Structures are given as structure tokens and as C-alpha cells.
Image (cartoon, rainbow, N blue to C red; front, side, top):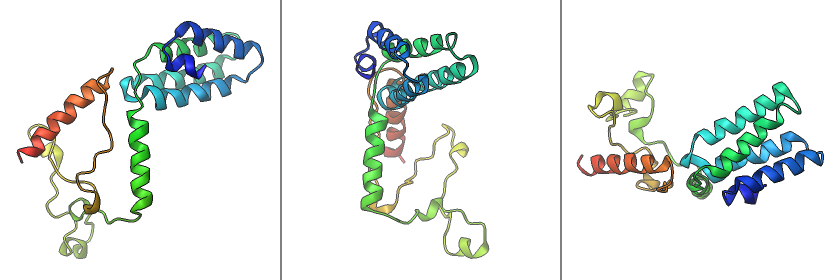
Length: 179
């Protein structure tokens, strides 16, 4: 099933779902794999894929077989025909690696909450810019620890919704360059 989804073959996806269901595979196993696929292989190229596969699980749980089987088939066709991107999957792996390599880096002072007078005196929150106070709804600031400043994890593709995300990130990068 997984390979037919990745290779964008809805016909094979339907066959393998039907074969697995007919052979007695538990529908939750199939749905678990499809939910993982929606997040790992489709990702932000089509963010609706995750909601659709979760809805298929909920539908199956509500209706049971045979009526709920169709929701699984519908989700399989959707996943097979959705644009694909593993950019979030790759980005998260890089972020995990940095966290493991550099555990417990301090939170930058300007984004620390300052609920007490002492914290304010120590500089917590000093220089923080509230995004919504900016006319474009974005205030360029660094949010990573100093040791990781400038690090980029997420590199959206030009497929599906990630094309829009890439354009927004390019726009924000331009704003940062002119601050």
C-alpha cells in the first residue's frame, strides 16, 4: 500500500486496501499507516491529507464494516493523488539532531516571559516585538537560541500548498533583510 501511495497510483492503492481488508487485516493498522503517510510523505504539500485520513479513521470507527471501508478507500485515493513532500519530516529530523547535539540551550532573552519585576529587571522580554503591532503582521526577530541563530530546518518544495508556504517564507526573509 505504502509504495502505491508514494508512487501516486490510486488504482494500486485501492487494490492493496481491498486486498488487506479482505484478508482480515485490521482496519486500524491500515489507517495507522495511512495517517503516518499523510504526515510523512504528503506533509504540507497538502495539509488536508492528515485531516482526511483522521476523518477516515473516525468514520470507520463510527460505521464499522462494510460502510466504513469506503472511507478508508476514499482516503487511500486522496493520498495517492495528493502532491507529495517530506520536507517537514526531514526538517524535524534536523531539529531533533540539533536538540540532541545542543541540549538545554537558553531561550533568547527577548522572548522570555517576564511575569515578575525581577525578571523584567534581568531583561526578560526586553526588545520583544509583537507581530500584530506591525502593519504586515510580522515582526522579524530571532527565536532560536544564540548558538543556532540563522539555522534553517524547513525547506518547502514547490509542490502543492508548500509553494504558497515558500512564497511566504521568501517574503518574510525579505522583510528581515530590510529591518
